[in-house]
Length: 93
Image (cartoon, rainbow, N blue to C red):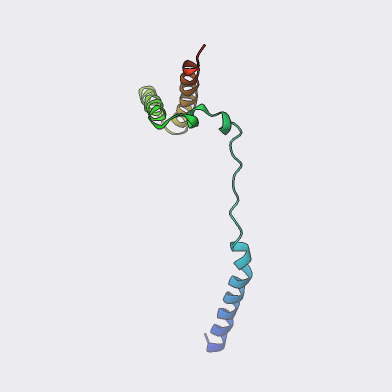
């Protein structure tokens, strides 16, 4: 490759980077928040209570032999149900 061909390739690369600069500086797309995030009882609980619920749900998933996506779905539902039950138990009647 000759010196002039290398210079032309370098100039083209620099021009491409300069042209792409504004596109690269755009903020990343953000995902919308979950619609139930405001009413999520698990997220609003204190850390020790969340941990206890999470550990209990993990133990239940282990006992059932769940793995992968099934385990994740089970744990999510389990934590949601246990947090709702704990929240209902905390409310005075």
